[in-house]
Image 1: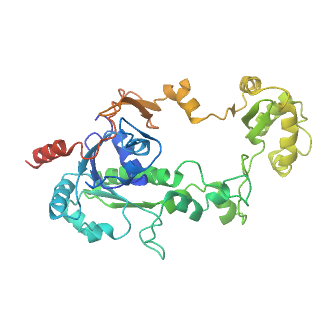
Image 2 (image 1 turned 135 degrees about the horizontal axis):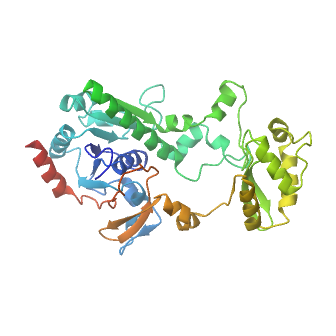
Image 3 (image 1 turned 45 degrees about the vertical axis):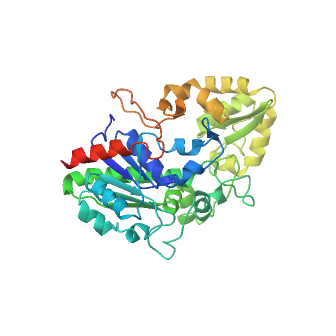
Length: 385
């Protein structure tokens, strides 16, 4: 693989989503990622669906989302032979990714102390549900549980009485993102110290880490934020508005942008209730009503055109198929083609980073279970010589 991490080897012992997403991000940056899976079915996400695709309808699109640019080997970690192979791989790796429950790796014979005995330069990424220590450190955690426990569901939905989960598995994905950037930082530090370290994050930490202004509303302001539907918690007008044929989004984040919106909708911008953001927010329901009365005169295409011409941030609410058909999405490298051994050439969501001056990256398809066993063993023997 090309890329900034082209000389890095990642041993991916994780499964489901948070750990695999972190390892995939490192693979997108060029790392050689060796995915270790149990022979009896592999990563549990291989069974998550629908939808399933392929001639036999047994390939999970969920698995395809988090495992590009990886090589799969099937290893029973509970067997002596399997543990010996993992020891050999640890010695040749730069990074190990795991998201087992606290204590599982220790019971398998791969405590942090043992891993660093095998390879003092190893960076270990450990992702848990609620943290590896503390009064509830051993709890199992899945995405929606973490969304609720970390307060995100209380901020999402039409009202405080109707908490909603975020549509994407955002706790898992953020956990993977935080973990990947922690790994890169630890690799950079290793250049100075010569030693690897443990990078820890959790689904709880991932969600709490993006509370941002919702967090300071409480910690500094003493106010508990609640769900506000499709409108911003601090800025008005900023949200989704009905027009003649559906909804559009308008974001007037400052008074200058508000005055442009007001002019287009024939609303007095100097009305004391609307002149500044503090007052607009205090009278938000009335403001939304006044805006939607004006917006009802035309369709979405009209309003998006005139708002765009005026320099006001505005946008459609696209379905997933519309996003992937959108030329702007494709122009940013957010769709990639890979050649899958069963499905042929398929498109996958692409990496969110680009680096100026780098040639286009050739991505590889998510692997079949154990697909690269012989290849990895040959590579390992070559490294050990």
